[in-house]
Length: 366
Image (cartoon, rainbow, N blue to C red; front, side, top):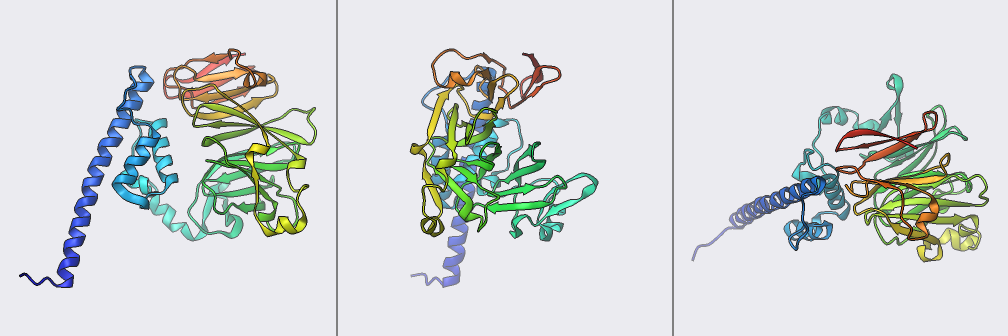
């Protein structure tokens, strides 16, 4: 018999692991190529759905089979979302593990100790938001003109409020939550709202005490939330309506009131645990308006209507009254090849501008 040493066994095991990993990468690359081809055909209107279609659930199961539990759910979602949004974009296999190779990494490594958040004019640097050092990225920036400040949300869960001089005034790090996908400001309740994949965060940034004591979590949500916007209606009092878009093509209208946060809980109970509220206790109107992910929602107060857009080539852009979310009447919608990624409204010109991968920017006269 051959007497193997422990070092020989270890080398053999290492070689086997490397070979298995390379084989898994080859299979993974084939899956990615198939998804890219599928998404391109969908945008051209040439794809016919069949039993071999790879949706997110199949992709997630395949990744878990190939690479095991080491792959995080949020990284899988981010990777699949990137392919869906831009099938022609450059993709690195390491992104499935949360690692990104991009130009400028050398500069980023030099600035690592300063934990750069973003740069403003004259290269003034905003640093150490919340005194938490970690590599992160700003996911959303919202300007609040009446109060003259900015609200930002980072991907990994940091909410911040900057004053008009871009000086950090309030900060909150949301522990044990998924990545933040959007944020906005509740004008009636004077609080910050943010959404993650399955939760809604309501942050009372002005209250005394620790930040965690002033944060309320509404969950669970049925679908993955991708964007959020506040409905600004002047005649509302002590309540806010929140528009949200999800990965099921739905536009949600969630209503929150001042009575929902803190007033029904004793101080002892409030200090003893994180404030988690059951989403079933809130009024949430939902209607499916798109056949793909809703990438942006916005309430346009001047037009007294909401807008939502999607990569869906048929139901690309919807612009209609909030009442349409409560009924099944037809909505005013527009079709754009390859869908719509973003939109905005110009009050002076009374036009809506949409942007997408198909035909660049388009102007719509209201």
